[in-house]
Image (cartoon, rainbow, N blue to C red; front, side):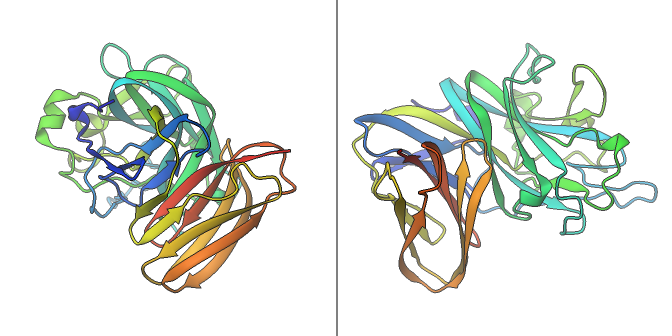
Length: 337
């Protein structure tokens, strides 16, 4: 299955796993390797690789906050549109977020991530989303990729939105925890894309009832129109024929298939670093909640085998996420009972 060329996406095959070529600190999910017919899980992204993400702020007296986030204009929700030629299952999102201070004082502030169909105008459709997922601000990987899994996978076709909902913050001051969504630099969204795809990225002013969506490029209150793509990337699943997974590579980080998978008590995650970097390994459930976390600290280049105890977990599906300074990967695993 090919993705729409309007989406500016290019794919290539690495061994038996499809991996996105265009990405920034991309989280790539592998699949269970024991099935004859399994699922390829990819992370979609609308801008090219190698760009430095931004999080612009208002500086004019009387204004405050992020252009794409909490601000004095009461903008509550931000969404990015993705196009596909066929149907996909959306499992969650990878988002890049920051705060105004870089620290968190209200760790239990909840951020909601949603998926929407599109209406005839090209905006998010309806008063309720197809599916959602949540994360507390205290669990966000500030300044880097954060994985948020939806409660259930959502089936979409042709075009869909993923969004970040900041909640009813207009009535509940966050005392410094102003949250912003990163985006690609101005100009990363091409003139052709602007002409061909209305409402590529949108925002919603805080309100009650059905969201009133506006185009971010033409309708935002920023000092000038920003032709960009939001750093909120859907994790989508395709059906593909393959036999096994060998390894995934990204930005100096290589992760091999964990074993055994499914596992009963312990599972080993082999990985290789081509440079010295900070490494953290997390076990997450399908709702995106962190079950446990292992901070490995600064590791030198070389090969490693990290054994993780999962004996206390209920049977089911989980994700191992491996994060380094400039890359993040995750692999879906099964826990048997």
